Length: 194
Image (cartoon, rainbow, N blue to C red):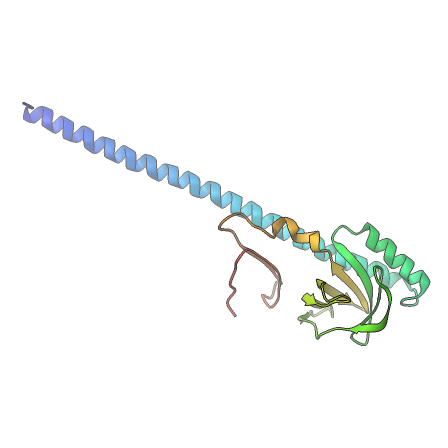
């Protein structure tokens, strides 16, 4: 038989073990949560950095084309558009817009007839027009993101965000403008409030 002294000792030992187990569980869960938070922040930073890189390359390319001073869609202009498109990392094509129609591009040449564009999804305060997932561009099988300023259009490469198209399990992200008016890209299943 256990004496009351031994029973009290066993009781304290069991309580100590249970508290130790709860503490270990809490510390383990805290470590897992911190680790997951670091992974989530890293993923978000990568997505944002890629979005910034795409936007910057688009702006820089539009600016270079505007500085060329070529007659839009002339042979010289198409050669320069092709060269800029060739060296672009995140752009699939560059072209010219006139009267809300795509009139030529590096990849498709002069378009006859020009391709009418839907109204842009967003026009920024600087006059840049943005179309997200514009369907049936030149070919019914093509869906593309387009940015335009000053009659110059850049078309984002479909591969620009391919790395993020299947986010890790339980993750989702969206690239949205600073005024929270326009989502550029969404990765995973994410429902945004209106």
